[in-house]
Image (cartoon, rainbow, N blue to C red; front, side, top):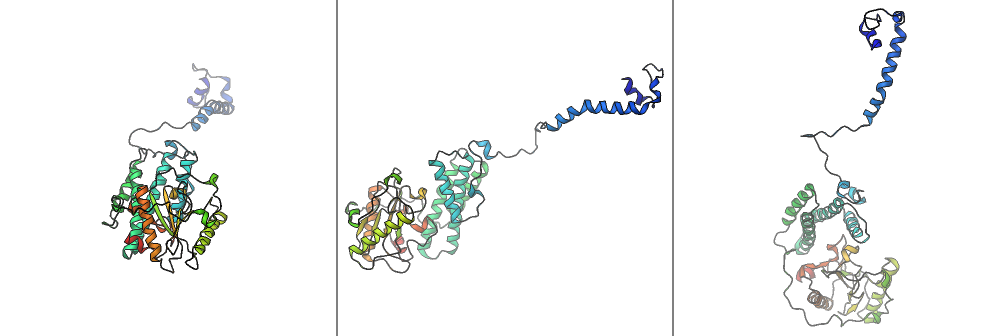
Length: 365
């Protein structure tokens, strides 16, 4: 305290009771010593204070929104999160969602919901773009397929307990916009067809053995444990040169080799194939999930039918279309698949398949 009084006495040191001390002639080193001592005493406290996070302010101050990490699971943003709108992005989201469901990975609830939401938003944007440029019933049906898929996604997000307020709001907006598209066109709420299928057993086919099918790699195939919900129709592009059964079987074998050797499938991807003469040929057996609509998420519960031919440049024969009618109706009857779920391949992804000359069949059917 005596040292502190040096500064209060106008530079004349005292002993605390008013008597001058011998330090009166040496004020400079006393000042330096005092300053150094004060710095040494206070420095640790300052250092600790700089590393201490201030207490949160209560009341009306800004509070950051919770991050994906706050919701459990991995908070790492998926690669698709920053991709621009495209069919490629939608495919990436579907693969990611399916991979998370089968691999045991635990992405956060936020990203699972966000993936489902962005998938529905992307499908809606393609439906809106299709509506703007649609001409005729064929194009309207494609728009309706995409609209229905977006509606299912938005409804799923709204039913998710962990969805954020922003996600629920986007889903509600998406539902309003989706339901405004092509009002009156058959959609998700339409009942299944009441028509009775003809009594033609699906087993009455040209069997796999007739086209010398390579044995399927069952170890790399997925059993069809999911409920059958869809039928997807394709065209093969390359076609037999004649209506002979032998030529048709050669094409089917060629398709299998393409799928196995080039696409790395475990077997031919389609469950049924129909040639120009209307013969229905057995492909991959129905006990296995197909490989024809896209990634695994699109193939679950999805029966694949392929008509032999390139229907961008040629028209399907009446015999082929008649067999397609019978086969689809039989599958609907046996597997309880509604008419609205019979789709062209192009409803699932950006492709010309099954060709512009086969698309009118969907309108008529």
